[in-house]
Every structure is written in C-alpha cells, then in structure tokens.
Image 1 (cartoon, rainbow, N blue to C red):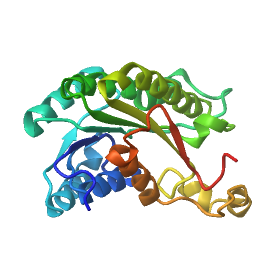
Image 2 (cartoon, rainbow, N blue to C red):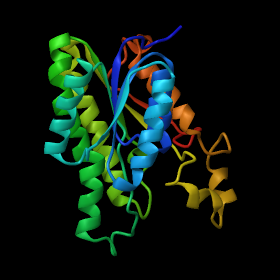
Image 3 (cartoon, rainbow, N blue to C red):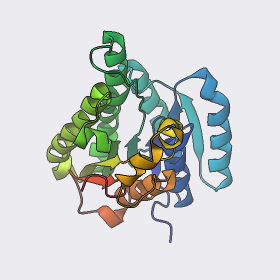
Image 4 (cartoon, helix red, strand yellow):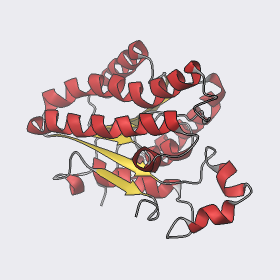
Length: 251
C-alpha cells in the first residue's frame, strides 16, 4: 500500500544524504516531489536524483533555492504551486554545521548556521501554510537533532539552532491544529552521512559508539522511514511532537 498516493511533498536540501533518502522514500509511496538544493556543485547530484524519482513513476523537479533566504523561499514555493498545484507535505531538512568552540567561533559562522538551520524553517513554513490552510490539511516535518536536546561541546550554534526548531515546531502545531495542519520534528542521532564521517572514522570512534545503546550509527533510510510515518495518515493524531531517532542516545 502506498501511503502518499497523489500527494505532493517539498523537501529542502535534498541533493544528498538524509534529504535524498527522504525524497526517495516519499516517492516510493506515491508522492510527487519538489526538492531544493543550494549550490552549483550539487546540481549534478540534484538532476540525478530527479531522474531517480521520476523513474519511480511520480512527478519530480529539482529547484536551486536557498531555504535560508526569505525571498528565494517565497519564489520556490510559488513555483512549486504553479508546477504541482498543491503542497501536502513540507520537510524542512536543509541544514549545515560549522562546529567550533565558542571562544573561537566567529559571528559569521554563527549567523550562517542560524540562517540555514533555523531561519529556513520560518521561511519555508510561512510560505507553505497558506495553501495548506486553504486545503485544511497538511503535514510539516522539521529536522532537528539529538544535539538540540542534549547539547554538545563545540556545537553551540548547531545545538541552539536545532533546539530552536523544537520550540518553533510546538508553537506552529498549537497555531495550526485547528486547520488540520500537523507540525512535528525529528531529532536524528548520529547518522552515517558526510557530516558525521569524521566521527565514525576518527580516533576514539569506538568509545563514541559505546555511548549509543544500539551500538551503531543510524542510516539515512531510518530517518526517511520516520519522515514517511509523520507525513502520512498513519500519524493523523500526532502533532507538536519530537521523535528522537538516535539509537537510544538520549536515554
């Protein structure tokens, strides 16, 4: 059974990693996919993903758009509505990390992380709620992090941005529940991506893994499966929640 047949989903930052896995998973369950990528260097991967999605029998299109920029987000959503006609699901996945001790962190590093990780959630959510309110239906899924719950030395900007996403998610859930629009967050633990490669392969990796009760890093598909659940009617009575997908790291 396909859980998102004839739905249309937006996924930001989907050219690779968790975002690409989410786009593929939603498409496998029948959703049309509009997704964004931000840099010219990602264009080739984005077009390859577009082809993969189309091969699954859904409509798919890649858009070069910076979710951290309000104007670009406004244009992106308008273009998606013109092309696809509706937006049923919005997955705010775009994110970066610029880890540094606070003593060494620059204002520019802080602002870059806040713009891409947190302001992007505001930018995109503000745009997609209008068509969702008109349809009296929708699911917004924001990608937080276990670091936003626990904090982590050397990641104050990343932790602050991801914690902010949780507060935003709960507030939007309260605002829009009466319009049948759900808003939830996912807090991944350490997932095997380009961003976490150094943790898995670096010195002390075994000691780090011992802190995770399941004893391994997560897989992008496991985050995608959780996203599919929250996007679908299987989660029709779930809103304002944070699902930690972290192998037990937050116990």
